[in-house]
Amino acid sequence: MRITTHPLPNATRAILWKERLPIGAAVLGENGEFTTFSIAPAWRRRGYGRYFMKELLRQAGGYAPGAASCFTAPLPPVGAPARAAALAFGAQLGFLPQNGQLCRRRTPDLTAVAFLHTTLQSLLHPGGFYLDATCGNGHDTLFLAELAGPQGRVLGLDIQPAAVAATNARLAAAGYETRATALCADHQFLARYTPPAGADCVLFNFGWLPGGSHDVFSTAASTLPALQAGLTALKPGGVLAVVLYSGKGIGHGEKDAALAFLQALPLAQYTVLVCRFANWADTAPLPCLVLKKGTTPP
Ligand SMILES: C[S@@+](CC[C@H](N)C(=O)[O-])C[C@H]1O[C@@H](n2cnc3c(N)ncnc32)[C@H](O)[C@@H]1O
Image (cartoon, rainbow, N blue to C red; front, side, top):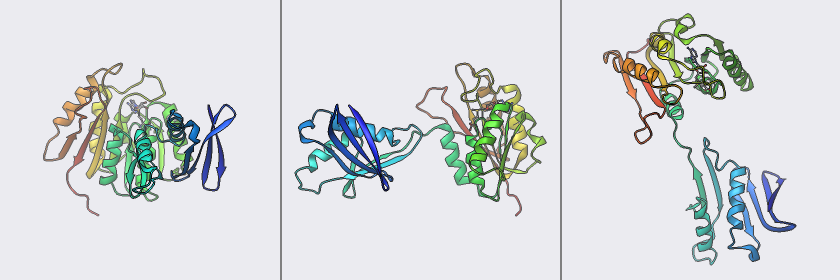
């Protein structure tokens, strides 16, 4: 069994082949709409349709773990003989009836990082100065650069030169070199790069560099001074966002020490949120937020 695809204007036509026989055809528009999906009558009710649709969804990103997606397909009207079969077939693959058609919407699992990104989007304004104190492969720096907009500025720091290079390459590919850059530095000395009360946001995504050596990761010895430096760097009204990790390889020392530090911050100056995923293991990544109280004069 194989699938061939052929580009059309604004769509792709796919054929399902059983050896040299075409037994299925589909047309998938570039916005995720199936305008055609059929299996030759002699080959129905044998799992070929499910295989074909699943494969087309997979190729179009419908199972990508970190991405949202939406696909639609025609639904025969109420009373039409083919309606029940279309509903049953669609349900096997996550399509539900909606506004007269079938619709398959996939929302990715919420992660600690995604949670912080969403929260930061609601707290930060374009034009700010944001510090990514663990820039790693640059995903968070890129996110902050998008939030900052053309008038904002973002500085990324990482102790590993390879991470700094990866981040600067990612920023360059997005055309963001004028608003964001990364430097090689230990984040416990971040005050060298940010004046006191100069940053709207300081982000720490601790742990090790994905794809890099698991022997290099942050530890309490540098994390506690770094958190303190991050708070000092924040403007009143600014946000410190932190993801803490624990477990295999990393241990629990950094997370426990950082949590103790955050929980001891004075209520008069800070609001501290520790946003635990309550039905995951204790070693699940732990997103935390510190909101520095006060207002900055315009
Ligand atoms: C989980 S990764 C960060 C992921 C990154 N934000 C991204 O979007 O790809 C943690 C990073 O922290 C860096 N790091 C560890 N200790 C550090 C320190 N003392 N100063 C600066 N960076 C450090 C590591 O080199 C690693 O790249």
